[in-house]
Image (cartoon, rainbow, N blue to C red):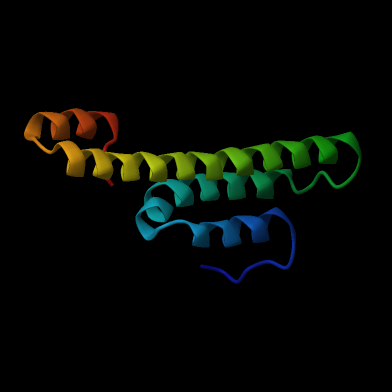
Length: 103
C-alpha cells in the first residue's frame, strides 16, 4: 500500500480500512476504495466553487456508504455464525449460505 497522504479523503480512506477485519477489507473494502480513488483522481481538477463543494459532498457521502456497507457485511457474517452455533443443522446452514455468501 502506498504511503498515507497528509490530509483529505485519501488519508481517511487509508485509515478506515484498519477498523475492518482482513477478510472484509480484502473482499469488500478494497474494491470500493480503488473505485473511489479512481473517481477522486479524475475530479481533482475542480479546485474552486460549486463543483468542488458538490464533489466534496459526493465523496463524503460515498465514504460513509462504503464504510456502512462493510460494517453491514461484518454484522451479517457475525449473525450468521451466531445462528449457526445456536440452531445448527444442514438446512439452516444452507439457507444462511444463500442469504450471506461466505468470504
